[in-house]
Image 1 (spheres, rainbow, N blue to C red):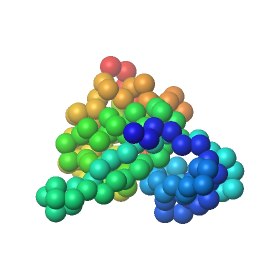
Image 2 (image 1 turned 90 degrees about the vertical axis):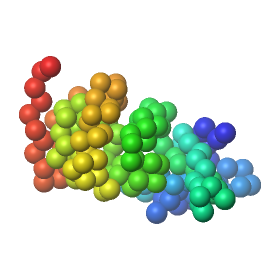
Image 3 (image 1 turned 180 degrees about the vertical axis):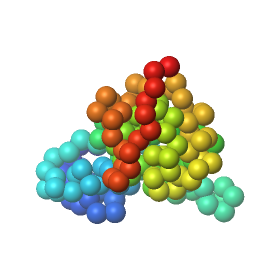
Length: 161
């Protein structure tokens, strides 16, 4: 299993291309990471990865999907995020438009409206994410993220429990 890659970042458009020795590796990445790495093309980067096999035709064939993250914690958050019923790897990847610390803060705050600002997350799925991940994502939420929301959105007040 590929858990980490270190190499030269060749592109960070809709996916990442990293040259590792004589090979170029393509890895999908959440939008927040593509944006973060856009100005590091040509530099050496280390990415933490997860390799999934995506089923096609009711399991008759599989395609590998390498997903890259900046840190092991971001990968661990993704693993937990994809454990939510109805939120597979493909959907979760599109939903991660913000840093995992921010998304975790919204879950801790039980802020369904903030979660609904993410691509692929509607009202029902936001409520499911909160119900299934409350108490499990606290370690991923940063203090800075607890006080901010998506652009143009004021988060709900955080009340002590």
